Length: 612
Image (cartoon, rainbow, N blue to C red; front, side):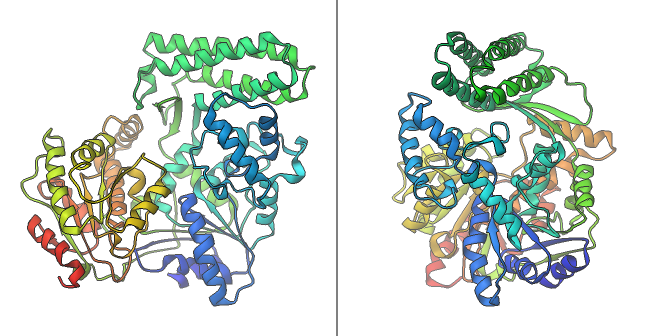
């Protein structure tokens, strides 16, 4: 793999390499990157993997190679402290929320000590901390060279380091955000490079479709209202009309979210527009944005800080009006609600031509790798989804002895996955295997509902510590799981990948069912309709490949090292009863298999005795 990557970097072209767990793929692409004469950008799937690469793998390799290459970490702007916004909000506290006030004080202390401004280093501030919109900038509210704190800007400093470095470690979101910004002609964050290497490349099609589309978000609008309120209080407190207008807009934005009901959900935006209360709520937001625009016009000569948000108000008004036009073909129109916010998405169904255009325009060499790119031993699905024309492509199998190290159990006598009795059956089975594994178990779910039901059934019935996704940040839950050494963890999608627990802390992974995307998902429905129109079989072209790759990710949590042993239990009869079950099974590592849960229990009981 290292030789193939080196040849691609030297000669140009595109290399696609699926590299199974334990192959050392990180070193297989980092060594050629370090030895190349040009500039290399390495992109990973998440900030956590980015940091692992930069803080753990890069120093090891530099030491071994005796390399003097300059390597730097570059994140998206939302990760860096903005000194200007912090000082603004410290002098005029933006809210009465005690959480935000406490977090502001923590960030202020961090600001006096940091060199990088990377908020990941600020102890006590998690990824979803309420204070973040107040102390970071976005492409919308950044003042650029006009900022009074421009010289101290951490984003500017990070960008300069990246320009100067030989190898820059980024993440996929930053790559696409930067490409979108380049398209608009703004100052991008990321320098150009001779070679791009994408690790966890299986995530690229999904992330690309987000960035090539458009999102209208009430969260972003709320952030603009907060910024304007600070300017109102600090610079023009006598402009009472502005204060009232902001309150009115804020109420109409909250009302718009409430029209969609209490729970978070996804739905078809075209169908939502047939609902009169939703249309009325949208029109109220537009009318209030229009009125705010007129009020701000009167304030322009009162404060120079008004100019930038003044333009943004008109941008939001145009976006909300555009949300009524759902006539474009080749796009999916869908919405998503969280507990507090609404986002409306216009997402392209096919990103292959756009991504191929990026590859062509950069004139760089591209390497794509992941442990999960193939479906039924073919890389065709991945290369087609991104419009790639690979000059080399191959699959490197894991060096682990799965036959000896792992047992795959497909238990008999389970209810069908949609059966109301399934959660009870899962609780009963989980109790048995957790007991046999002495804790040390991951339970991975395809839905929050199933996870909560099983958690309720297990919570008081176990003698082992039990953690569930959502109780704290992912990082903290994982640290607690590893520290206890005999814990049980319940998680959904975000725990299916990017989680690395080695050794005897994890001996059993239970998966509740095959991870097919929800058939109600409007984006999936649109993609399937599009596939049908192109003469493809929607299930084979869209649903099955996505589910196979997701399952491979979940399965990959179990064996992380040559000495790991464990049992994988998949509680879905369709693996045996449906024809497509064979596609899943042939895509998984070659483990010993059984349908007898008692064999799985014996395997778990004997793990510590180091015998099968």
